[in-house]
Amino acid sequence: MSETVLVARRGGVVELTLNRPDRLNAFNAEMHEALARALAGVAADATVRAVLLTGAGRAFCAGQDLSERTVADGESPPDLGATLEHWYNPLVRRLRTLERPVVCAVNGVAAGAGANIALACDIVLAARSASFIQAFARIGLVPDSGGTWLLPRLVGEARARALALLGEKVTAEQAEAWGMIWKVVDDARLMEEARALADRLAAGPTRGFALIKRAFAATWSNTLDAQLDLERDLQREAGRSEDYREGVRAFVEKRPPRFVGR
Ligand code: T3D
Image 1 (cartoon, protein in one colour):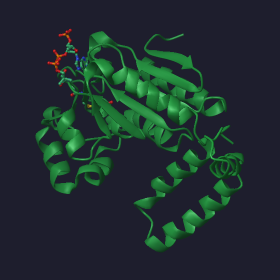
Image 2: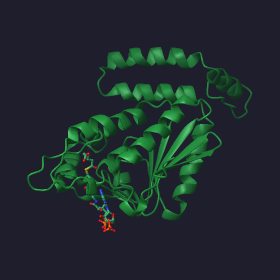
Image 3: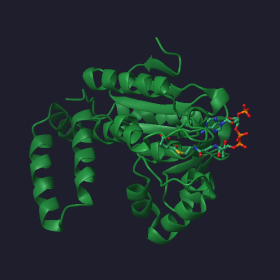
Image 4: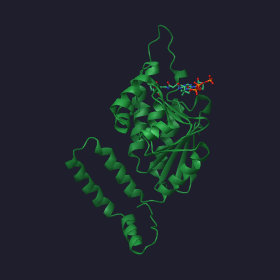
């Protein structure tokens, strides 16, 4: 089993740690494969009710491992479109469509695809010392892993364009102030807070959370009319869940709900 992604189970939470710290957790094929396998395992296991993604060492993830990308004179360049098609795009799609909430604890620098993979998660916490860098333009590339879609939606087009073109570092505090992430946390408390958040989500109405993710996935391409129709359909489904029944009962009985995730 690959050690490039550490997989730990704590109650209803699966904690995934990118683990190539000497390369700032940059992606190689082995790490992609390990992460894809771990996320497929989560999707297939109904007892997993939340995911926490983080990085080992001083970085969250430095994007693609560039040591695999040097091209000698006369050699033909690698097909980067193929890597996106094979690895990065499925990963982002998997995170966005996974029917469990995904918390990302950005423990240090998140650069290139690493930044955008963090931003693709549902709730992003960042250590105060962490930073986000759209490093692509520094090496002549285009933001990928959803960056050109996510960034303008999160921070507005003016900032998104400047970040993509300049490749400047955004501190965690700036990212919070701009609405790029949910919250900055003191370094020493990051994992404690991220775990508490993941535990809280794991005790929540998992089916309802999956439907919330589906609503947000559609919102940017839908008209208001279409979104209202979608909300109607999703609410109909949520209203049939055991957790909805329990939620209303608990409210009426003035006690905390005991959600089972169905
Ligand atoms: O290629 C495709 O398939 C297409 C897909 C592309 C997706 C992408 O993500 S493209 C963007 C790739 N990522 C980058 O361009 C970021 C490169 N890294 C950096 O700019 C800097 O390392 C950081 C800003 C992230 C951190 O800087 P700093 O000063 O804190 O650390 P450092 O000294 O640069 O890095 C520490 C070590 O990690 C160093 O190794 P060494 O000298 O100790 O042996 C460095 O080479 C290594 N490292 C950092 N990033 C990468 C990396 N090694 C391989 N690939 C990396 N991306």
